[in-house]
Amino acid sequence: MIKPLSKLARLILGDAQADRVVPPTGFTARLTVFASATMAFLAVFALALSLATGRLADRWGEALAKSATIRISAPVDQMDAQILAVTEILATTPGVKEARPLSEDEQRALLEPWFGPDLPLDRLPIPRLVEVIEDDEGIDADGLRARLAGEAPGAILDDHARWREPLVKSATRLRSLGWIAIALITTLAGVVITLAASAALAANEQVIRVLRLIGARDSYIARAFVRRYTLRAFGGAAVGTVLGMLALFLPPAAGPEGGFLTGLGLQGLEWLWPLLIPPFAALVAFFATRHAALSTLQEKR
Amino acid sequence: MIELEQVAYGYGTGTLLSGVTMSLAQGSFHFLTGPSGAGKTTLMKLCYGELVAEQGKVELFDKNVSEMQRDDVANVRRRIGVVHQDCQFLNHLSLAENVMLPLTVSGRSLHDPSELQELLTWVGLDRQQAAKPPELSGGERQRAALARAVIMSPDVILADEPTGNVDWEMSLRLLQLLVELNRMGKTVMIATHDMNLIRSAKSQVQARVLRISNHQVAVAGANL
Image (cartoon, rainbow over all chains, first blue to last red; front, side, top):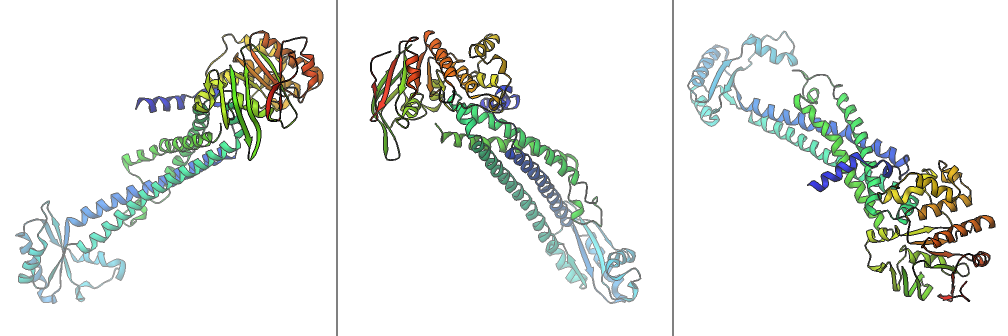
């Protein structure tokens, strides 16, 4: 552990003289900075996607798992009796923390997006809804269904399982896709930086030849390239990360009407996660360039 | 210092050197001559480990080149200063930085910064130390290459056609510098096909002339 750390310290502190042996500019240098910035920018979004979908999966899972709805379909003259029967059943059902029938205004508000504000609820055979909030133990859905069938035949329990499962599954898959995207971005960054470093090594064949001729060891030559590309990758990734974080402010803030996309962002301590991208990019560049440099040098005497 | 024993080397299917046996003793001065394409540069490269003999054995400072690790080769090259005909420099660095490069890559520095000034004065380049290599003339580049070759105070100096691109006056100046190094105890070998240069060394140094002929190295004529 101490050896890699001392290597890293040497890499960061550097050697001003050694640093100068590689020509300072070139196409590959710009390519590395640009590729790192782009990858970091995309990584911020992939990270935000993963974290946001993770939050979403948790929220949907928790919220829907702790609530249920009872739908009562009955002739208008029997509706109040059915509601009373259902409320009494729920009052004696273990696992029910709170149960209440939705008022007509609440039901109208639920239907308003589809049917408009002037819906004559009292004249339409629309089922009434009873909202059930569960306690930590939760209800025995099958037992409750059996009781409802016996004592309030028009009442049907919806424990949200058929909504919850696909939603949570979708959110979980989106989260996995986010992490896969991060893995692919990392791999791609490694490949691009390896190609850039290899191109730089090929373009600097004369430099390498001179250095070998005057007694430079492979580690010295490799370090000159590795340090340069690691720092470039770090710098490029830092710029890309900052731009990515600023871009996360572009979507409108999450609101009750916003749905999924408006929640694509970072919250609280999650904003610290993108700060890991530049050092991680530098780490990828370090190993990619080191591998490319040592492989290239092995081909020369 | 440098020993070759029954060394053979070729490119592709052709044999360039075969059964070469020679030795460069400490403090000796050798000219290596032969027609163009005879293998002078190849022999030089075998002597500083850039090439590995296909047959036979090359020993540098009592170490077999074919058994050396890459870091060992680098270490040996710190003891051998090489001057090429096409002096190779890092064009983005100044002349002074190029001359200092062997020290830089080995993590060393001069005891006294004035030593660099002295060295550049010795090769007549003290006024050009800030210049970049492309700004230098052929003769200046050759002298800069010589300064770079000796800054580590190597035991052996190998010069491959060092006077190939310079006028006669500059050739004599370079020869004089190499003779001075030999007087300081350095082993020197100069590959050249310029017989006038070899003759002009007669009065200055006791040298042996090695000639490559028919893939082999033989002592040519009497020692100078």
